[in-house]
Amino acid sequence: PRKCSEPIFYHTEDPAYVMLSMNVIRTERMNMRFLSAVLNSSVVRYWLRYRGNMQGLNFQIDAAPLLRIPIPKEPASKQSMFGSIVALIQYGHLEGEPGSVAAADFLEDLIDACAMECYFREHMAERDLLFHDLVAPHLAAYDPAASEAQQREFLADLHRTLNSPSSKIRNRLLRLTADSPDLLAVIKAEGRA
Image 1 (cartoon, rainbow, N blue to C red):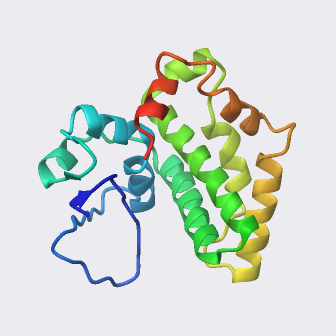
Image 2 (cartoon, rainbow, N blue to C red; image 1 turned 90 degrees about the vertical axis):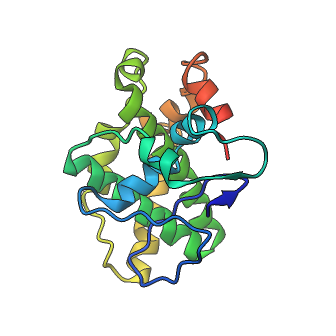
């Protein structure tokens, strides 16, 4: 929505009715799920707060600030990985079961860290906080056209695997702000919805 207390971007492939108070983004040049993940990231929320003139509790997002958001140029394979995570997040929230919602919430934290990596790859590499290469193999078998039962099972297995105490991904997520207090912690805190 143009007027809101926090920016919210949503990807849909379904036909939709759009009210006048919303911005619509359409592009053939990139994966739209990737774009929605980046736009919903704490990095872009931080950017909107300080560069996009997002002021106060209620603000208006016009097309001009949206067009100035620096969108990272990522290869199709990485955009596809983001797309799979977004599809799983949307499925988890639509499913509405406590386990699916918890998995979707975990994936929201993960995709935010992945978006940060697009912008701050070198900084994160220095601190052993990279995610892309660790996450991609876990999504290789994901089929967004699978049945609901298969989607539910994939989401549960993915969450169980990535959030296990021995998982490098989980442990990097837990260290993210502590290992980068002057950059990533600030962006997470001030870019929080």
